[in-house]
Image 1: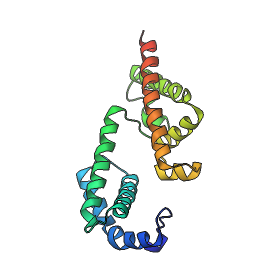
Image 2: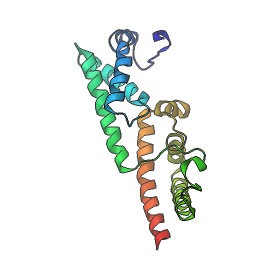
Image 3: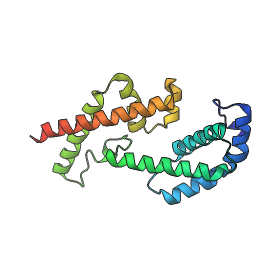
Image 4: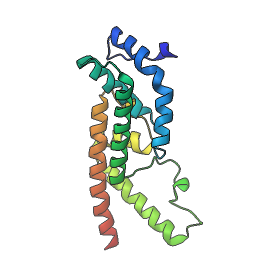
Length: 184
């Protein structure tokens, strides 16, 4: 399993250090994060980012005991993720019926409101610049991991994060504006 793990941005010595000092702690880190942050369903991006930050820190200042540093970074990333999630929460969308856009149990008024909100969100997403819209859609609609988006579009993870942040802010503003227009 460790042989399949590749860290192309790090040199061979850093890869060896990673495989020796960090990678063995992944199962424990995953279990620890799942008990501390049960509302987060996918820890992959947080763990990968914690790995990268820990290796970079080790590169600049030797870490004698990297495990606590790794766990602290992962914890902070999860906390930041939850803080951002409180501002605007988008769930990956798939089948419209499974997300309550049309639900016979809700009744006609609630279903109409849900449908209007969905249409407002779709309009807000369509108003994004092309690159931002593509990245935003891959992440927020299809739930694709940040690293996969970056790899497929041949851009950095930081660019993906920035575009998603821009998309969330613009969608929020557009959503609120369109919602106000509908409610008037």
